[in-house]
Image 1 (cartoon, helix red, strand yellow):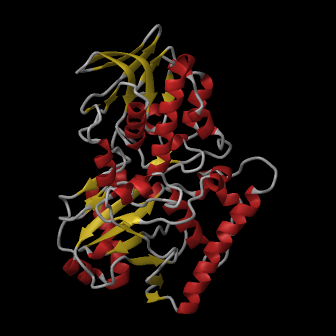
Image 2 (cartoon, rainbow, N blue to C red):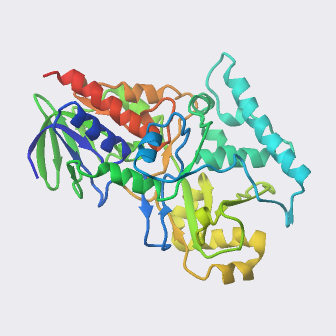
Length: 419
């Protein structure tokens, strides 16, 4: 491995891949240093476990009409599928299917939830938790909060910044990638100077930027750090001199949320992309949201976010599988789940993986400006920059946001270094 480079990039997720791509376009040399065994970061398509592509991480091209990866995916021949927004093929109330009128009431409650959040955010005043702005007590209100808040955001509305939620809302088109979102990101990494299994534990800034890890030392003119805020907050990467207080504050204000997936291989005979959900039945009830038969494939994927996902991550794959099977049994019965899905489940491990320690960021109430602070941070006279989904003030939590952030960091660092 080379011991010198013009610009070092820590992390080969979407932001790191984008930064390296942009630096090449600008005529800059770089090295991408990745601690893991593959590029892609939190975009990872597993083609072995289920026999067909399964996105363990990112699944949707959020806000596709503005996503920088959409035209790239189409140019490369990837197949995009756009499902119906808020579709529920089966919506359970207790042990029965909701009527069409009850489904319409559920949808109306979700609309009212979002409208209330938007209306409160439009008012002057301090940032507050989402939970303080949305309806409570209605028949579908807890279900709306669980779905729109805890599941999609990966964190309970009581802990999530209202201002950041509104600023980073993901409206618009949200197609999935048939070949796998991770497959697309891995394709974009091809040909780049990526060094795998090359963790960096320390960055020292003096006349040069020096990166230290178990495989040796690398000297660079500048550095782009794309680690998750979970990894940064853990102290896995040390900076000397230490980071400015405002950067530490921004990292602390952007903790990692968790959205876990548990996939079961088999079929229920439903139409492709069938969506299953159920009404929250009281305090402590945490339903999963299901996508069955994506692209006509023989598997069902259950999604679970927030504290319940963290608890299952700590308990391990067996507990996650049991939870998923019990939740799916609410729809078709325990015997049918056992018959239809005879294979062991696949559970994602983003919360326990030390390279990430979560799925994507949220902002604590009062920390809505943390994304801009991290994106605009200029340690070492601007020779160190941060990039990743946490740094995007509009498309946070998305691969497209990470990609755009990496591009922006590369351009800013190149301008700082001059020639």
